[in-house]
Amino acid sequence: MLIEKLRHQLAGHRVHRFGSSSETVEQLQLALEISEISAAAMTAWIKLPDIEAKSKPIPDHDPRMEI
Image (cartoon, rainbow, N blue to C red):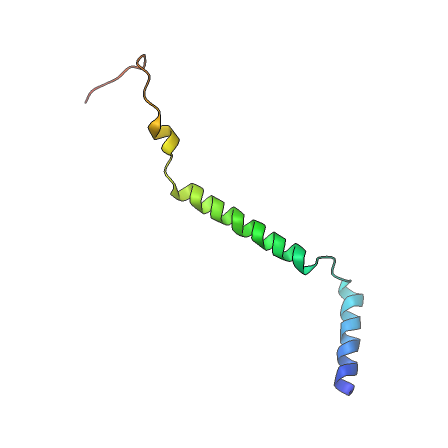
């Protein structure tokens, strides 16, 4: 009984000192998902070659030099 009373008091002191948390579990999960998606997109962007630049033909009017 004393332990439960002390835990309750400690919880009250934490709320008083730090305030109540405004973020819910769903908000934290959403933030985590967004950061994971951003990290995956950045990793994919870094690893993939620039296919668009390689697939464009060189225009005929550009000077060419054979080596």
